[in-house]
Amino acid sequence: MIPYEELSKEELLEIKSDLDAQFEAIKAKGLNLDMSRGKPSTEQLNLSMEMMDVLTSESDLVCEEGVDCRNYGVLDGIKEAKQLLADMMEVPKDNIVIFGNSSLNIMYDTIARSMTHGVMGSTPWCKLDKVKFLCPVPGYDRHFAITEYFGIEMINIPMTPTGPDMDLVEKYVNNDPAVKGIWCVPKYSNPQGITYSDVTVHRFAALKPAAEDFRIFWDNAYGIHHLYEDKQDYLIEILMECKKEGNPDMVYKFSSTSKISFPGSGIGAIAASDANLEDIRKQMRIQTIGHDKLNQLRHARYFKDIHGMVQHMKRHADILRPKFDMVLSSLDRELSGLGIGSWMAPRGGYFISFDSMEGCAKAIVAKAKEAGLVMTNAGATFPYGKDPKDSNIRIAPSYPTVEELKTACEIFTLSVKLVSIDKLLSNILGI
Ligand code: PMP
Image (tube, rainbow, N blue to C red; front, side):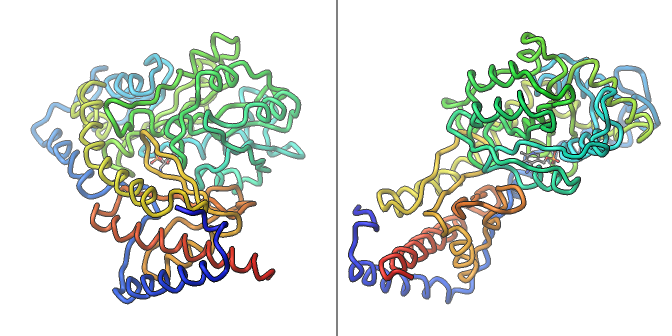
């Protein structure tokens, strides 16, 4: 393959006319495809259907503490669900509190509480002139939406293959008391699928924050979401690491069963130090008399233990793997060597991150839309929806079928090529 950049104007025009014809042909099919959100497919949802039969009108609905799950009580979550999620999150059972159906909701509540009431007795953030958050980019749009909603200033921190740029993280956190937090998706990150290296996790745990109320928001949404049995990433457990470094209160860890059982109908949890959890419970006691224990019981009885959950994740992986393979092989076949994009092959999670030539991402997403393919909005992976290089595009392969993905990838790679050629031609023509 000769990189497009090395081709003459005439050669580019010739390739363009051929690609235009291919694009028009596929556009004429009037397709309607979607690679925009990381939703599990129907086939994946079907994997958990037996969970619906676990609780029936005949079931004993008393949990391990002896409480009737149909009634009020047990603020923290029932023992059996706490044990299951504690094992999933690799923390002691006593360092976890189960919430409702969404971890994002817990993250939102955590920021809201810090704004109105402060963190463990410190000044509420709303009373401060400035509150800043570090945002590893590209990252998860819904994280950035929460901090934007509360008027928190977001600072981009570039991701590297081993995690966020830790020199920058240390510089900001250790020197600026207005920096109160950082969003992290430490394993199979959204969208790049990067797992933070041991060194990165050690450096996080050893931070010396200028702000006493600085917290790491460690969103381990994809902790057990491997794609391959023989190639798995390993992430050091952050709570223990922070404790060892004398920073036991510096981290909140979040997770949920959204992409294990049912998104929107799973269970979410937070793990943190005893002191943090006590602070959180003060709000929680006012907020609710207790979360949905029947759903907790359903999950605990269905999976039985972490082994059951791990086995279940293998079935998810069997469905997801061919989809990731389809996207990655299309990108390799169609775009390798052309110098118009780069991507990484993740070992888990829900996304593939694509970086186009600078200034092309928005146009690529728009071009794909013309042919009936919806992608995540370009820019969504950055705070305020602004990708300074206009180059990152998140690909979500989970929902479409493998057949649909094949066509979707055709549209996507054609769009990348066409937009890149237009960009190169306009550079050549000086416009
Ligand atoms: N965190 C990350 C990194 C995610 O990708 C997602 C879902 N796409 C969530 C959180 C949402 O989790 P929940 O359903 O538990 O709110």
